Length: 216
Ligand code: HEC
Image 1 (tube, rainbow, N blue to C red):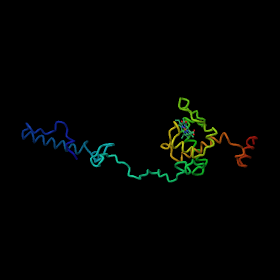
Image 2 (cartoon, rainbow, N blue to C red; image 1 turned 180 degrees about the vertical axis):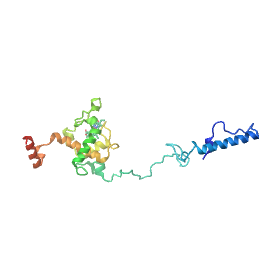
Image 3 (tube, protein in one colour; image 1 turned 45 degrees about the vertical axis):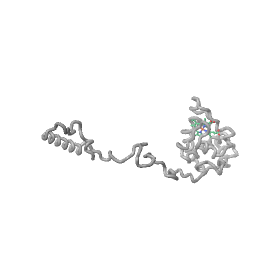
Image 4 (spheres, rainbow, N blue to C red; image 1 turned 135 degrees about the vertical axis):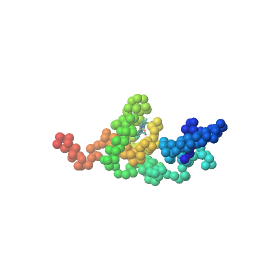
């Protein structure tokens, strides 16, 4: 413990004009101050420890930087990316026409939630591209219901969400890969919602539909 940092103003010994008796009295005072320091509010605990403040210089390393670069080959947890389809949406050098895992109702529901949070401010909740940000002057994106976008595979959408497109920023930092696929599945659901035909239904679904539409 560094006692000098605990001295109060006025307790500094003054060597020049002090008499022996005065010195003795001062020594007692300093000692008393030290005792008060040690037993009261002057505890230092771990406040004084060897550490570097962010971006501080250091003589320890040759380049004088205390902030060290990552060791070559370091991969952050969850960023290994060994599953290329899952993390890039690509199958070889083209965009994948399939999803990396089976699509469930839960995944589409998750996608709807994430879409409404991250995409609807510009693309609108139905994907037509008239979200609130666009209504206030941002570039209007194309509608997801355009024939061109309906014909593109899931890997294309995953890539746009991951890396951005034109003026649209990428969302890889905020939205993890599985959620980007979930959003992609929801975009597919939005597209289907306007372009499905009765022939896409299973016979069971067809008979349910006929029953419901005939009021049964
Ligand atoms: C800040 C507004 C904004 C947000 C938020 C946004 N986008 Fe976009 N998006 C755009 C704009 C603008 C374009 C058109 C970009 C251009 O042409 O320069 C676009 C284009 C697209 C395209 C079409 C690419 C093409 O080939 O035409 C897709 C697909 C898309 N966005 C998906 C998404 C998804 C999914 C999300 C949510 C994760 C999202 N966007 C979030 C503004 C946004």
